[in-house]
Length: 608
Image (cartoon, rainbow, N blue to C red):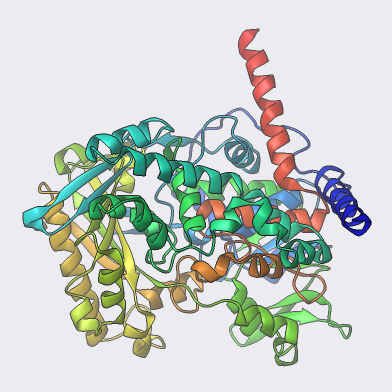
């Protein structure tokens, strides 16, 4: 009994020390929001986003180098910059932003990864954090309510289910669609909310000392303390099938699995619950487009003496004789340029970092191999981009998203599709996410009058395209184009059926990005858009504690999706967790504290 009390007291002291008595500098120490500046576009924005790498542009006396300018890398660089650190961010692509970047073809601007973001109510911690990371310059436009439309079945038997935001309206509207299923819907909501409240322990396992994390895991306390870990081993299919026999309701409970990339039978109910709760209070889109995110973060890095440079492919991480990270090598043509820094942070993903950027002798370290054995690649992404003549009104487009499924038996359909022959699978895409960035952005019509865009997203097996991976990105050959066109034609038939005002004569531009496209532009090893796989195994307490910002190599850290969770919010949480490790303080709690403080101050100003 005495031993148990001693252990409990020690545990309490650990938690108090590492979660409430931080010692490092606080990037959220003060509110840095500034008055809004005039929005700029195109050439002015590109001066910030497309600063090409030159050795003369590398700042002196760097405190850190960050590999990759996705939100996990930029977010971490801004956090460090706010504590006075000089950070260099290196990006292999020709523009900064990672999956937050945009591109333009034939006068149409397309986003590649930002479709909608949740949890952005004023003064909520996530919104407060984004305000601080952009000095209050990034504006968010709310989507329609309903923000998602779930479409099930073939054209002759299509059923549509609107998904509303609002903690009470969401279940109320579902009950209208499914009379008699009130008990199942209430229980589903109870479970997802309870899981969401348990996410704190995921962050704790990645921040706290390894001995404490191991104690929580091997005593079973992790699962007892957090409903998130209690439910993590259970698949989404297993849980929803216990709730109801209604197959359409099961599908509606599960539809958002496309935002993390695992079919319901392989998905953790805990991961799924986080996405459901993320959008309970609404959905938003960045005003001015996705490139606004990086555009407003980079100046903060520069103000602290750092830089964000593109066309800067890092080919290896440098180590000293003590096997401590001490810089990176950038490959320009055939020449290697070495950049020294006391700290290297990789936002390139765990596979790229460990398998491509480490020297061979360090790749084989048992601790590195242990982490690699715990994970697997996520599913490859397929994106299709449409540029059309016509306004959103003329084309019947709104600021919402459509999740279109060929039927409600998701597991069977997706498994057959991904395991099928590529030519056959191209004829029947079981899942299609359809959204209009132009309809969501209130600045669009001013910038591109009389034009509209659609972004379609699904999944594709990397192996279908593997034979063309070494070809020139703009000319991979006729067979590759033919296969892409088969996927495009199938998706287009679905779009024109669901959106009858969209006809072929309105389409000015259409093209697809396959998994090997993702490899080229965002460095995804197998074309994955969500990093390492988000299946049930990803959410064991053991893996959660093992894959953390600190790597087995001194002065080398990981940030982004692979550290925490996928998507914009997950990658930013990875940055916050990495910043906590580097700065020796709990930035998650700091963000919450600042949100409370700014809310109080803003309310006082309104009352004056």
